[in-house]
Length: 263
Figure 1 (cartoon, helix red, strand yellow):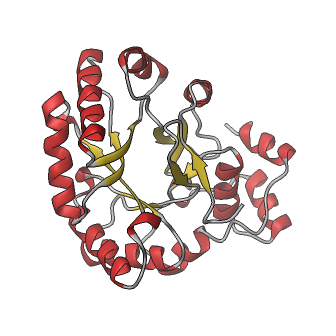
Figure 2 (cartoon, rainbow, N blue to C red; figure 1 turned 60 degrees about the horizontal axis):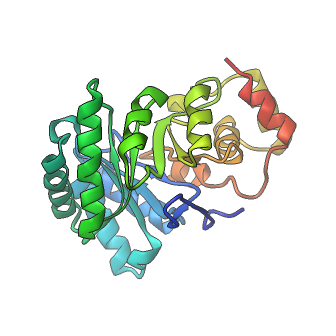
């Protein structure tokens, strides 16, 4: 597996196996970090209206496109926030995001957080499907959805969610959600895969010594070997480079299972 490999989603489209998160990146840091990530081979970039950086991330993307990156080789993910969770609100959110990002379409649109009212989620999903039919969005999914949130959506959906973006790190996995999504052919996208740098379990550090990698790199490789898509965030150029340097080795099935058992 290499950083340019992709998974096939349940709608037949392809998504990179590794991505760059932009939460908490602001201003010039968000722009330059996006440029750095794309220059280092990242092809999936994740943002959100809530992050307040779509304009800056969009500038980083435009810089990469001007330097020769083709739009077809870029995979951009953004989200619909709670204030736009309605059938009509989705298209409003899409248009505003496209304007801020300076792009013609969104590769993957996610509902950022489920509403407590399942009817709101179902109606919002109808808006998500309409966004696909409009041509402004290619694929649609959810974020932070548990099985109880997903089930009503799946019952009424004419287009199935392709991704569920959830918190996923060693010792921090909702296995019920992971198993449910696997059964439904929904890929897990892993945010906060490094626990904000707090990867210090002896199991992880021992494997880091074995493979001559950092604990963070072991955690990211584990996420990949679990068939999820990690999207680590960093504003540090060296960390951005180190995070993607996880494709020259893989963990054994036994090592993956040992990490799975961490609590």
